[in-house]
Image (cartoon, rainbow, N blue to C red; front, side, top):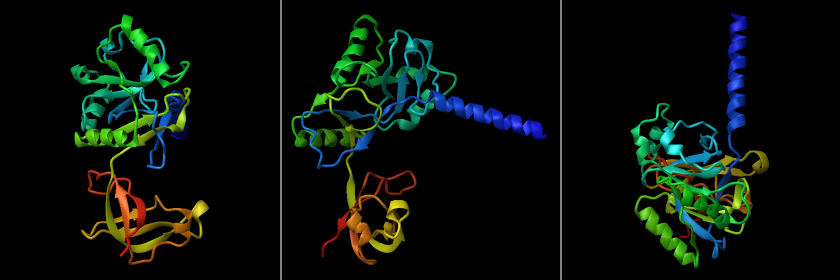
Length: 276
């Protein structure tokens, strides 16, 4: 019995090691705020699908899970790495996930397009790297493999208009990138997600203590909206706010990005104390 348990533990550890070993090293997005000057950068729609990283031989998710698309899907794929989003249409994430994560690929893959926003390990800026794939596609036809359109940002208002257009049609948001940056991985200041947010107010019920670098300071607040929803807010506060938090009973304004399926506020962020 003991030997069997040891074998099971060893097998589990081996599976974990394999999973970690195959997890691709990708670039990730930071969050845009209005203080960032992105004029001259490029923008594209942020597609709400499954990240699809083609190594040149196999298709992986962001977490390193090996996908099993039909053979016809990856026929004529390039012998070099490409990175993009497996997607069908806006507001269809659960269906996309079901299709691409099914072990026995079926005809639903015909609904999937692979929208490429990066060609890793190539020379030059973003547009130069994407041109490597465009050149490949000139002689290798793959109808569902698309290079995601990148539009140069002429003004902050143009970005806001594009964001409004995307979100009004149930799109997730926009990605803005510095096209001159060489290929890098990790969470980048040159690649930002821009999302439409809403704001509302809540009354502070309790000040919750911080941990780590915020020890002996405020960590978050528990508050309640006029409709009775309770939530915790820990993001958006400056150090001076944490040292001198808003008073219990005061009202604050916070922003959020829609609601979860359970009706909770998505990503609530403190904005300011409401001025009477």
